[in-house]
Image (cartoon, rainbow, N blue to C red):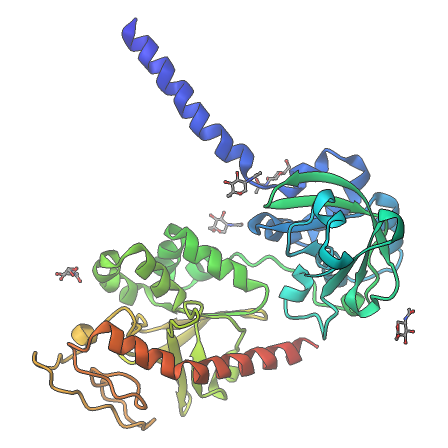
Length: 408
Ligand SMILES: *[C@@H]1O[C@H](CO)[C@@H](O)[C@H](O)[C@H]1NC(C)=O
Ligand SMILES: *[C@@H]1O[C@H](CO)[C@@H](O)[C@H](O)[C@H]1NC(C)=O
Ligand SMILES: *[C@@H]1O[C@H](CO)[C@@H](O)[C@H](O)[C@H]1NC(C)=O
Ligand SMILES: *[C@@H]1O[C@H](CO)[C@@H](O)[C@H](O)[C@H]1NC(C)=O
Ligand SMILES: *[C@@H]1O[C@H](CO)[C@@H](O)[C@H](O)[C@H]1NC(C)=O
């Protein structure tokens, strides 16, 4: 009896713990399915692959339009890529429910949208201007048509403060920039693309690390280059990998991706430092892509890896297999280098910046920053990192600009 009671209590407890987490998961498809007047809008969120992107995000507002408004958009015969851009202009990257809309400070606010965040929106076309009108109505317009009222707030559909607000607006926001022809959205399965040829172990490590996997997946649409270590390299690295902290594991994995799309020929012609997905403010985590004849290498202060094959290449995603795991100096000191310097404060010489130098790099930092020996303390290291950051950020911006131009 006692046991049965205990078991029943445990099961109820387990259900209590489980239920909220499954019902709380934000699902825009399910929310809109309760309102048949938004069925067309809902359908297009799914086919344009915007729904999963909305579900991933927090603190957003979806401006839904009814089926009649969607019909007038569809009558324009836009490509699916253009419809995606138009709808992504309807997802504001801030939380606005009915109350907040009517209480906007000074009667006007500017909201960035998913269209803005994709980097494909030229100028200010990815922003939506919200204005409280005379009589308490709320108007919405793309910023580049801000002196007209393109649509007005109709009603609140769903509000989960401050994660997700779904509101109805009276019409589709008109935007020549969003309606311009755009490539069709395509779902690339990163995991299966990686597993297909020689990067199974890296794919498995990524699948195990939800945070890193999200970072990679979140970058596929806007452009992503993955450098995956081959299975042999990854397997022999696993003991060291398992030894890293959770944060270290995530950074190590994210260190193997660049937030821009590069083809192999693009990499061949873009010698220099580049940001990785692990680059975050003062944390440097940069790599140097360098070519030598036909060979493209990816260098860190600790290791020089070689691209051995192209695993996948279809804009906006490319995957290249490396012969080695990339070791960032932010996580690994020279103890992993082939020949560790002796203990005791000898200042290691920085390697000569010669692209012909194929010998294993000395256990030291980048050529331009004098780095202490293996004992150099973390604070010192960080200082150097901060000093070097703008240069690397600069390259990132150039890469991104180049990418944005390609998209136009
Ligand atoms: C969201 O809900 C729809 C409809 O109920 C369902 O088909 C879909 O699998 C759900 N998505 C997620 C990520 O749970
Ligand atoms: C918006 O304002 C600008 C400058 O004031 C004007 O040139 C333009 O014609 C206006 N657009 C509309 C649609 O009224
Ligand atoms: C908002 O999201 C957080 C984190 O996922 C969750 O804990 C919270 O319950 C959500 N709030 C609402 C109102 O859904
Ligand atoms: C991607 O592919 C893997 C393995 O082929 C599969 O397990 C996974 O469900 C797929 N993911 C998606 C989102 O299709
Ligand atoms: C794991 O970390 C410990 C403590 O820092 C170290 O002694 C050990 O050698 C490490 N093992 C591997 C495989 O790196």
